[in-house]
Length: 221
Image (cartoon, rainbow, N blue to C red; front, side, top):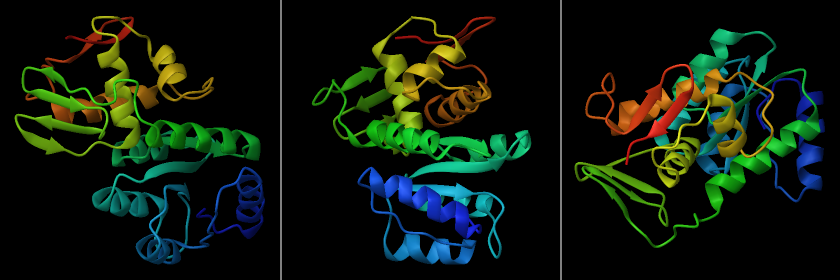
């Protein structure tokens, strides 16, 4: 839990600990980076406005080193920060002020998606030059492994499990993010763009994840 407001950090930590999570708190960006290096976490709740090292820079550094799940805390209405954070690889965001119970629900959802094996465990899914192995949550393109965040992998696998079926952004939010999402559907747009950049030979002319204009997205199997 990374937030320079000790009151917020304490309350969130208490709620998460009641659910059985082990929580470590950092009050500035420098402390957060040191703690993630010494004791790599399963998930980071990350405020963007931090002293010493800001949240966006921490997100960039963490994502360059691992696929740890990241939930950003953003000021209400700061649309640019949300999109930049998602582009850097954050899995989700929640705007301040927020309910601690809602944050706990999102933590559960993100960890559940990133920790539990898929119902396709043990199978390899092959689509021309795209190779997906759900049991190890790995993806290869033209034989080279590409690193996806937990949420990018979840989104890809969900679409793959429903080939040629069109989903709106709201449907994808509710299905992939694993709760009734009351947020900005641009979250899906950002994740789709990042996925295309990683798995498509030409992201501007995608082969796999197609846009159905006015409706949403589908996976072309």
